[in-house]
Image (cartoon, rainbow, N blue to C red):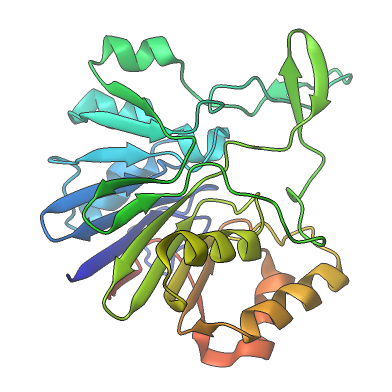
Length: 276
């Protein structure tokens, strides 16, 4: 039942031999199962995993939290060197997502590879839009209901649908949920669905109210003080032991969380390993 979690990509690192990179990638090892959650943005996962003495061989699959390039950009570098049987993601992961539309500096921040790239590499694409068990006591959330009135996707993101530019609600935002004897471990990429929505859905679907750990991005970096206040109030009401904030949480939100919740809050960085 032991779970080992290793952060391979994150914005920062405390280790001089490793690279910080804007994005996220987390390796989860439970019993004989090994899943990579996200791949970072540019490929530092290859270097960092070697420095940490971690092999990316024998993966049971790669889970993509959503279709932004800072979570999918390392995929092809991984596939160049390692065989991966399956990639798990929401069916909208390949949506076209321009940043700066209407300006001369528009660029795509959507998925960094195409479905055909996976097909050429012999990787099975598995779409998970609904709650699904992928290994014993390991679940992909599928699309997460948005129920809180104060949480949002965390920015003015846009998506191109049939040639028309629309507000991006990031329906493809998913989380990984692991059920241990001591409670749930919830892993999120950016929490565009809202950290509280994610936690509530995980508890609802598993029937477990104890949260051993929440790990990953929270996208509170641009959140209003009011939203941060409400998030803290909600977190204080949970039976939660550890919150490992990273990537898109932002300095001020991280500081607010730490001030309110104390040493439950840990800064997630490249090189951090947890045994739960």
